[in-house]
Length: 124
Image 1 (tube, rainbow, N blue to C red):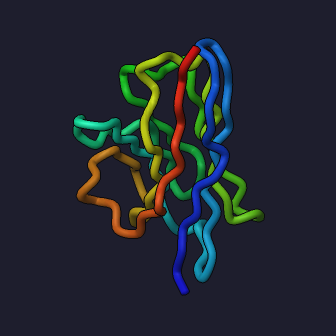
Image 2 (image 1 turned 90 degrees about the vertical axis):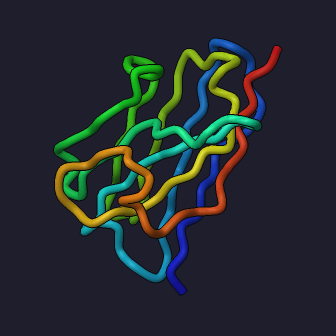
């Protein structure tokens, strides 16, 4: 069964950090670009970051550069999103998704397999 599973979300205070994981089962991630998206209540889905299949290209949304870092460990079949200096506005459900390899974008329509999401809540 092809599956993506996100984990690592939780409740954190402003300025805190979390590391999200996106683990694949039933297939290997090394042929795919991976992106993280997020969706807050009442807001549109937003691309946060993406990484190419080879890991040599990364892109970030304008709202997160310098605070978030995407990485991948193909040996572990897992992609990570390290989130530092979290802000209230980072509160959302975070999803990972796959797209065919090559230059990665954060256009959601290019992504096929999606995980169920992990909740990130930034609150004092």
